[in-house]
Length: 284
Image (tube, rainbow, N blue to C red; front, side, top):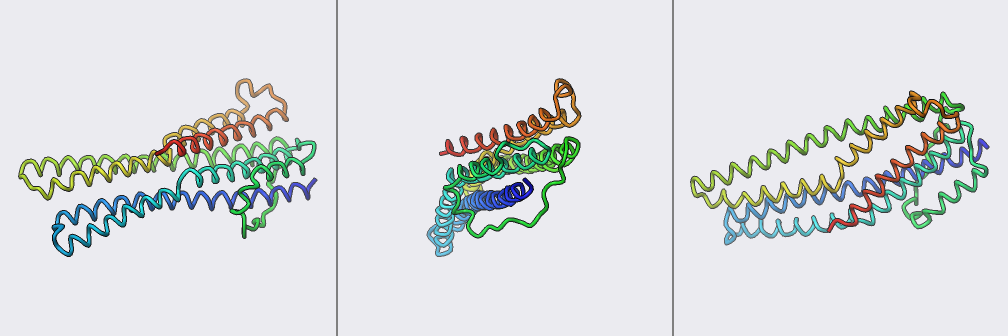
């Protein structure tokens, strides 16, 4: 039993690192697309400001066009396929983790090895991303009964993952909100100044600011920060009820508590990953 659990834990490490690698690729692509789109808009506007007939203006215009083209390529690299592969790798990692924790708590599946093999086989087409990834050397989680499961699985998920990430998302959303407000205010000031003093060069920067604001809004929408914040907060609250054994949960047996906690985590993971993949595939 122990050797099977250690093998499953090693597999979970490999899939977790694989998912992290794919997520990093996705984030780099999206951030690059955002930066290049902003850079392209700024360079194009600068070209118009210095004059398209000049050598400098032509250089800026050409550079702006290159940036816009590269933004499209970066966006494609962070497209639906990368999103889908990342969410599937993460799903495998979380499924293996759930099997390990449930087993350590005292409720293993009838055939642990077969379950692990089935989970791994479901993502056979993702094996290419696992090349060169070695499992991290780490002991099995310190879980051996219900109480240790509650502390080292449920409470750790509440404080170390869901609430922690929810706080980060609050700060991230606030930064983007302030940035969007700043861009809107800048666009307003430029528009008023251009209209008041009839400065054509200022007027040319208004659509640039609007384009940057749109690029930022698109980035925020692609990352689904608001959706993730709601899901993390909701799951943390549900796990807290399980940890505190409140309401109907108080009448559950130890086995029901363990499996219910894993089910809550699983449903949350599957739900947000399906939502992200679906939304990403519908993005033009």
